[in-house]
Image 1 (tube, helix red, strand yellow):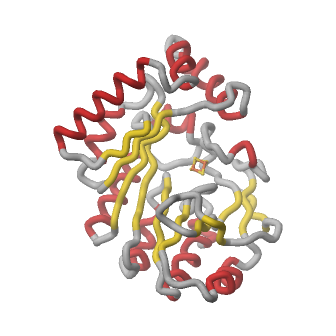
Image 2: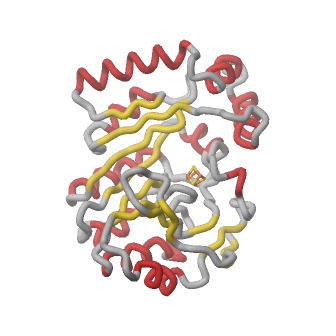
Amino acid sequence: MKVSTCSPRPVMLPSRIDSTGYQIDPYVGCEHYCYYCYALKDAETQWDKEIAIHADIEGQLRKELENLPPQRFYMGYFTDPYQPVEERMLQTRKVLEILLEHGSSVGFLTKSNLFLRDLDLLSQMDDAQASISVAFLDDSVRTALEHRTVPTSERIDALRAVKENGVHTSSLLCPIIPEINDVFALLDMLAPVAETIWLYRLSIEDPEGVNWRNLRDILARDFPDKLELIESAVLSREHPYWEELRQEVTALGDKQGLNLQIHI
Ligand code: SF4
């Protein structure tokens, strides 16, 4: 993986997540390269070959934090903070060290288990929150749709480990694709380790856009008999498949007392 330097830009941006004021993306690009990623249409590099970093993330972040009160920042909106290149480039770890010095905290979303490495920092922060994104238990489906992610069970194991050490946890079950994910098996695995579970369906806004073109090719190749149902459902929230799933998931959540945020 080639690592280049991105053009000058802020490290912190106003957050698109309601519960935080600012978001930080330590990388530009994401080598997980999920075909359904909403950031893919704005990719500045070919994500399976090149990822960019800030020229001096530590110096720049320290300056940007001057005059800001301690608070919780969000990581994981445009890129995964724990994508494989983090193992050697340590951009996310540097951000966590600076946020800790500042008296701040972090909430992040990842498809990796690498965050377990940073438990020493997370456990010193007030209110840190680790969140994993999961969707596919079948590894052949996972690797077809999310190139370089780690297996789902490894993400869940890492979440369990940080929870046992006092870090808040949550999970995003997304994208739900009709007859592809095993939603109920995933909920069973997540229930003991995630304080909150968000569920989102695969929603395609632009049938001609890069996400659906990529996904459609893979689904047509691997699930030709399911493509018609999938296509009609992902293009319409009103499709009966979603209403049925909403009812089943709601009933399970009520029965088991789960904290589910259902956006199917
Ligand atoms: S891990 Fe997240 S940011 Fe990275 S490619 Fe996948 S959806 Fe996009």
